[in-house]
Amino acid sequence: MTLNVLEGSMAVAESVRLCNPDVIAFYPITPQTHIAQEIATLIADGKLKCQHIEVESEFSALSAVIGSSAAGSRSYTATSSQGLALMHEVLFAAAGMRLPIVMNVVNRALSAPINIWNDYQDSVSERDTGWIQLYAETNQEAVDLTIKAFRIAEDKRVLLPIMVCMDGFFLSHTMEPVDIPKSIGNFIPKYKPTHAYLDSKRPMSQGTFAYPKPYNTLRHELSKTIDKSNIVIREVNEEFSKKFKRSSGNGLIDTYKNDRKISIITMGSLAGNLRYVVNKRDDCGLLRIVSFRPFPKCDIIDALKDKETVIIFEKDISLGTSGGSLFEEIRSALYSLDKKPKIIGVVCGIGGVDVKTDDIEKIIESADTMDNGKIVWLS
Amino acid sequence: MGAVTSAKLLASAAFKDGKSCQAFPFFGVDRRGSPVEAYCRIDDSFILVRQQVYTPDYVMILDKTLIGVVDVLAGLKEGGVIIVNSDVSVDFKSDAKVFRVDATKIAFDIFGKNLVNTPILGAFVKATGQVTFKSLIAAIKEHFKGDIADKNVEAVKRAYKECR
Image 1 (tube, chains in turn orange, yellow):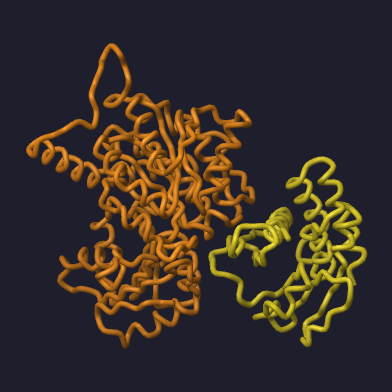
Image 2 (tube, chains in turn cyan, brown; image 1 turned 120 degrees about the horizontal axis):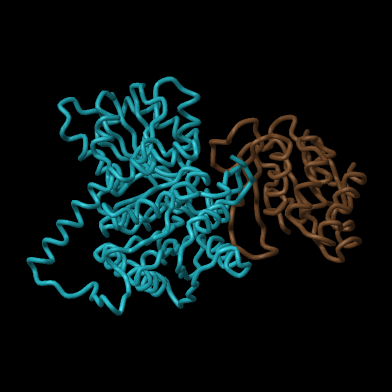
């Protein structure tokens, strides 16, 4: 392992290079821009040999890689915020056509008003599209998850697109020590498409029309496949950890000192601040959700079943429910327990507002006096 | 003014000294010349916290015209140190120790333009000793190439010497 001080975007670009995609297309948008810029530089310098398609929008960027993936090429793109929102229609197509596209989402708030800073309203809004969603805590994890994503997506038991989500600015524009493996060997073998490719001797139609019955069957299959992808995510995480001596918890969730009576829960880089708080105190431990889709219901129940209180800190607001989506989903997962912990939701970091360790501690300290199901808005 | 690069070079130098580091900007607008804050944390082990720096040990002011416009000393710890780029002495009305260097003059002499982000680091090393001079030079040589690297090294050396 060789650590170097790298910006998150540069580090991710290097990890994409290691995975040798055949086709890349993107449209630059803050804060994804540095990834696009660095990958374009790698291609111009001859360090990454692939077809780079310049497009006029994010809708086209994803459409282009849907086309290249359907033709049998390993395909990659990256975006943020409004760019992801513009892709919305074709996100469903990528998943429905079972195309193993990898996309880094550099998380940023959505308009209006215009805001370039980090929160998860962009990717969480796309949770029902059939894409796997993994969230990175550190620049190292953004690198590792990007590499693992190609392997998971292309596994024959999965064949689904993956979003590797990383926090805008908090990771993308932050420099910290990162290890970029010199080589990943055969961890990502050459992509041999079996279901979607271009071959004049074996012509096929893809993404065609389907009557209610076959459509219904295919949607059910898609639902079962993304549910079962947790097995592959776990396996790939384990194999990666054997080879590179690092892991993202069990691949789906990550826990830290979680034997205490309170669990504080989050996704992404905010886990750093939560870890800091856990180290300072003796009453709480951390549960970090790595995989938001598939949603690791069983792992979450297992991690929270003996808790007195669980507090969910999330950079998302599901407008009309008063809280964030992670809060609602964890609360619903805990419904099956006979003895349910008290649950508190914290909407924080919306539009890039700093979530300070002091504020996190204040909420933990006042949790006792809060009603079960209370949602706090931190601003 | 290139404050983002200053923070990155400082982080890189600290890492070369065997420390862990974290450098990041607070972005307002992404264009040269607009007021920008950039932060650098240095520690012995991997840095978990990712919030902005509210109580700095050291403050570097690259542009003295910001003084009075922005509360440049906000949260500065007791016993903190200020490093300011200025041609005249500045009264901060604070107990903090102040180091001054005319980085603008150094920059115009060496680069022919107002690039103060590397010279100020020479003053930082002199004022704080938080990174070694050797590692700072190595970080600069890694970041810049050829003639530009040499000029930056020269600027840092001069700032180190002239910092008071």
